[in-house]
Amino acid sequence: MKLPAALFLLLGASAAQAHDIRQHASHMHGQATLDLALDRGTLEVALQAPGIGILDFERAPGTAAEQAALARATVLLKGGSWVTLPTAAGCRVGSSHATAEGFDATVAPPSAAQHRHAGFTATLQYRCANPAALRAIVVRLPVLFPGLHEVIVNSTTANGQGRNVLTPGNLRVVLAP
Ligand SMILES: [Zn+2]
Image (cartoon, rainbow, N blue to C red):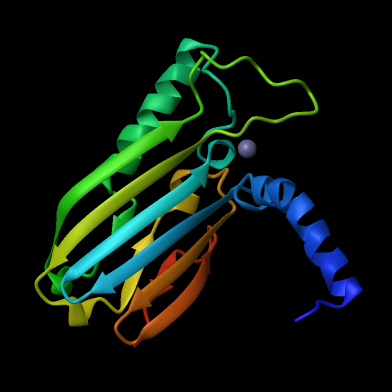
């Protein structure tokens, strides 16, 4: 099959721009992404958050206060207290991880035109005795980190998929009924 010339040009342009688009789209300052997956009794929570949002910088900490803020944020994200599950669901944390990436001092500072991103990832895994009770989950990230204006939540359960946008005024994730 021969591609029409216009389409071919379009595809070529997309490929050339893909790198730029990916760099900017994958990480918006002030906006985090949370993936929730419920599979029978196992709930997986995966967070990707920009440094600017959790903290107010994306470079190696320059002061003791910044160093402390970085450490505090990582501990808080790993601790999982930012997620509140219904007591009736009987969930227990099985594992939790949190990583800060791009805050090391070994990389040369970027030029003014070139922002080098840094951010956080965190995963929490729960085992829930009564997953049917997991109708709504409270995620307090926009309150704990005022620099996070939005948390986009994509959720998957056996009943379907959902999308919620959390803001300081709306911390509830409603799972597919
Ligand atoms: Zn950034």
